[in-house]
Each structure stands twice: as C-alpha cells, then as structure tokens.
Image (cartoon, rainbow, N blue to C red):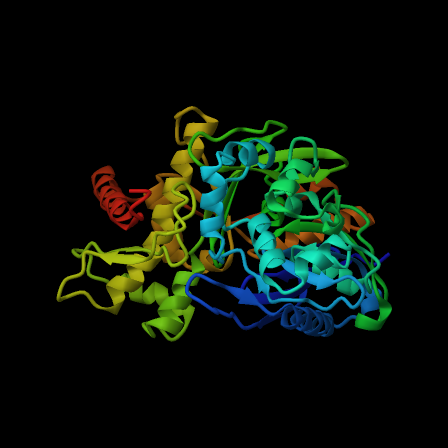
Length: 500
C-alpha cells in the first residue's frame, strides 16, 4: 500500500492541505485564506460553506502538487480549529447559521449568569474547562436560543451540532458519518473527560438535546470514507484531533512532562500529564491530550487568544508592515531604550486571567515611539504571555519547582528567529524548533498513517522527531526581571474592573 497520507489542517484564518510521503516528508501543499466576519464588536463568525469550499480546493491542489492522484493516498487525517460551532440541517447538510468562532465573546453575559448560579465548579470538575465564551457549549446554547426555530428543530432531531471536524467529516462522507474525536469533544464544555462521555447534567443546564451531538471516537479510528466523487477516489478518514492536540502529537510529546507551544492565530501550550488529570489551581485547563486504543492521556493547557493575530493586525489594521515576515527586521530596529508594552486583549485575555471584558492597550508611548517599537511590543507580547503560562504550569505540575522545561514550538510565528530568541530570553528556558514546522498537520497525518499501517508506531515516530535549532536564553537576569515587571504592570492596568 502507498505510504502517502493526506492531512487537512482547517485553521482559524486559512485552510491547508498537505500530502506527506511514506518518509513523512511534505510532497505537496496548498493553502487558502477565507473571510473573517465581525457582525458586532467581540463577535467572530465564519461561513461554513466557504470553509468547505476551501477544503475541497486545497486538497485537490495539494494532490496535484504532489504529482499523484487520490488513489495513491492511503489515509486522510483531519485537524481543525477547536471550539468553533457549526449547526446544520440533518437532511440537507446545510448550515443554518454562520459558524461561531472560538474567539467570539457574545456569550460572556451568559457565562457570568452561570457563574452567579455557582455552576463553574461543576463544569470545571466534569470538563476540566472554565465557564468562558471561548468554549463551544455556550455558543451552541446561544444558537439554539437566537436562530429562528433552532430549538424546536433540535428537539425534533432535525439539527446536527459539530465542531469543524465533525462538519467536514459529514460533508466528506455524504452524511454517513456523524462523529468527532475525544480531543474536540473535550473542548465543548459538554463532555465529561473522566467518564469519556457527553454529560447529561451539563447538557440539561445548557438546554442542548443529546440527539444533536456526534459519536465520540479515539483520535486514531475509523471515521468514515471520503466519497470518491469529491477527490477522485475513496479515501479512509483514520485520524482526527483538534489543532493543539494534533501539534502535541506531531511534536512527539508522548511522555509525561513534555511540553509544546503552538504560535498560530492564538498561542496554546500543552503539558503532557499522562494518565493524571491535574487540577489547576492557577486557572489553566485540564484537557484530553489524546485518546489512543481506548487509553486517555491528559494535559494542562494554557490558552492565549492573540499571537499571530497581532501580526495580522500590524499588517492589515495598522499598516505598520507590508508582510508578516517584515516584523523581524522592524523589531530589530526598535529603540532598546523604549519599553513599550502591547497587551493584545482584542477579544479578552485567556489564561491565566480569563477576563473576557479586557480590551487591548499599549503602554509606554513617548514622542519617539514609532512603528518599530509597536511591532517589537507585539512580538514580545507573545513571549510575555508564554512566560505567564509556563509559570502557572510549573506551579501546578511541579508545585513551584525548577525551570527545567524545554519547550518544543511550532506554528507560523516560530519562523521568526527574533521572536524565538526573545521567547527563550523571557522564559529563561531553551526553545526547540523542529525541522518540520507543520507539526499540526503532521500529527493528524501520523494518526491516520499509523492507523492505516503505512506509517511507524508511536515509539518509532517519536525517535524520528528532529530539531532544526535550539534557542538558548541570552538575557541577563536584571533585564529579564525589569521587563517582566513592566509586563505584569501593563496587564494589571488592562484587566477589566471586575478582574483587576
């Protein structure tokens, strides 16, 4: 059987399709951005039909770029933006509303209402998550309450809910498979990560009918077969994981204590805690890292809402740079005597603050401040937020112990040497960049390829992981301490009145 494996990486701002060969090397790739919709301040939506069209287009182009046909592909893996909610008609497969994106904050008041009812502890105990608009459950509840006729139709079994993976599998299989995997389910605020099942009590609170929820499978499983009419051959879908868990797998973080951080639209750090569900005392999330052969591995996760999105803002909003790649050169030109801090709370602050009402701010401006200083502040903001996550993880995992962590990084921003060096400097820890930066897609591909029997097992895959470069800390302690003090003061000033 051919060793070619196809990965669909459906992200927040673009869709990528990558064909890997039998040696796990990229043979063909295509990427396509799609529109972001902002109906109101704090609201973020996608058109599911546009997402679907981008998937079909990029897959066909990637197969063509690889110089093969769909018949040469042994398996298909899917990784996706998590928490984003799609609701569609069970008969027609047509969405009844735009997808509500994970960044969307429209359910902030509903989350506060649930907190006032003293329900957050219940949700956290069952799901490992906090009551925040970030997660799928309250978004789905909003749809059922606000889309005309949705609640009645859902009660009759006429509607399907899914994260993006579920919607894509439904479409790929012609409606034959209504499934998701444990990692995506664990981000919905409706899934009990201890019992590995949808939680009836939480569904009742959110007023979500169980009949509209998909079947939950392992990350490597039989999810259905992509119909021959779409790509020219029937392709088995054998691997699915949410993007951050897929990156954890792609980085071969299979051992307890291993940590990865993905720098895409947002930034997400996961620390493998093995079979232990570590309950955070520092407002981190307890989540499913992956489930293989019925065995669940857990992780602590810290979520930063704005990472690469800040660079997009510099490019598209401020027009401070023409291309994202220009940010390195601009940061290097910035005046080292100016300490400018950008707190990118464009859609609130994630871990460890979880303040949906915070909004972005810039501090330390002078008459001499120019675009270079603001660009540097945007890149540094990602590093400062990563330090906040690492500190919280150490408190939970090592009870405040030593800083021995080596961080494996991936995502679009890690191509920036300047940012990665500053990250190592502010973390005071080594940062490892792999030779294959497409680790999210690689993780999904490995799940599918190993399931198909054409790629190596977990142990051999981990041995094949290769480092491109290690960034070692090169900042003196006094400078680091002063910079971190300035950052924490900036965050304190940015927090909303209820959080400050």
